[in-house]
Image (cartoon, rainbow, N blue to C red; front, side):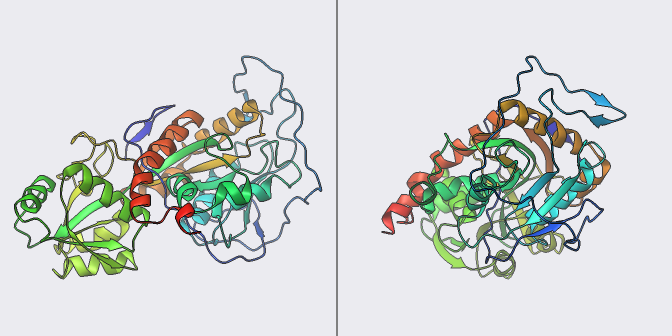
Length: 386
């Protein structure tokens, strides 16, 4: 698996699926190995304060990371002064929850303070509700509570959910990403017995037979659906949309020949592809997953498409930029650890890719630009729901 580092670059980047689930009390995972499951809650989150305030900005200029015995040393202003607590706004067993624990295990030997995990599933607004929660925690504004974020899905929330009017969070002014460390591309799948075997072959067939193809979508307005709509628009093709509710069901329907093509995720596509029931025609981004070396990429076709899963951390906008840089150093170094690399290598289609603050913002801006007209055409913008 290639380990690709990109800093402050827009372009063909991939973002994450957002996940919101029912609210439950927060639990905390101690800093002990837990690569695949949530450990028992034996610690507690730092208590909330009525009016948490940020410490004065770190004054060191030209800061460079300092390591002693393999441990990243605190900043001149003392940060971090308490445990770094990774906030997961989904269930412990979710993709974000497993990511949190992989990062916890990889970073704990590098950090001068303990690394903890808090699981606090959000009933609404997901990442952004979590960010609002962090602001009221002791040390939250200083950067001691990085929030795990699926960067694409969280960006799309600004279109489909009333994040700004209800939480007062605006994009991009109040969005402060630290880092993204991995991406998983979406892929276009097709039935194996189709009269085409490539993406361009499908496009040619669709143009010669307008409205004939059956596109199996994940609902209407999901990130998978928005991605397929965007790519079809750029390719100049149309199809009959048949919405289903589950990516696994989508794969099964296309494999059975009851649908012609779909946008899906690699961990669902891989089983049907290995069985010879579907073909993977297109990967979103600029890299081809090693499982499908013959697939085309949107980048080589001249499409700047950011759809997919891009996972990392956010902090409040009040967090000092030097504190954010320290966290970037911690998590980027942790992404080199064998514990973390093993995780990414085990995920179908996953790719190592580091993006800094500016790189993540550029990726989020791109997905909002692409998705906004599609969301409005579907009548799904939050202003259209009032």
